[in-house]
Image (cartoon, rainbow, N blue to C red; front, side, top):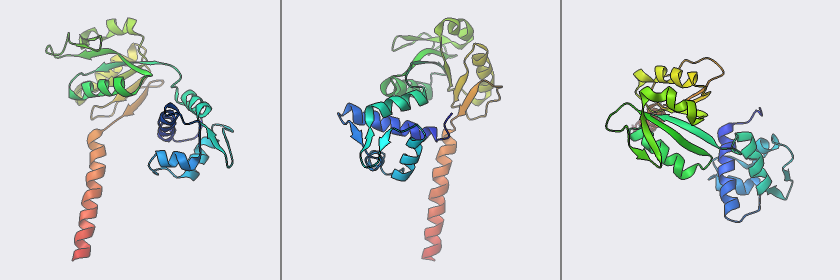
Length: 214
């Protein structure tokens, strides 16, 4: 695996795919940096893309189509991925809607919940099933990725059940860390933790302003 930040590569892929759809065929590192809002420097972009092979020519930029294809291959986006979503409350519903609207290579193929008010609902041709039926449903659903949008107290048990069905990659929105053995891959997304990074910075800036004013 190449030693490059995967989130940066994904950002390049998304920006370049948009440029390609808009009819653009060639782009420089400076142009790509502009598409990314100058959050990543042209130097960093050139360094990252050089790890993919000789895709650009000095002074001429990058041909976008082969670059998008290479990034798709590296990121695993040249194929379709099927998601099993557990928890269809506000967060689970928002996640499914986002994926359906923005990420064509990802399909929410199975949805589970334990609330009688939610079980039986149909979302974009997918029926919400009782979480008690998880194993029997997933035996035929051919899902690759599991997404957990459940309370913290339920997350570990649900994760173990998903892993037991053969799912090897989990995205966890529950506010707890999961303990699973390899080869299961886990990404924990702590939304409250991400907000705390912002509030820390805001509080730090406010304190600095008060100190300067004093």
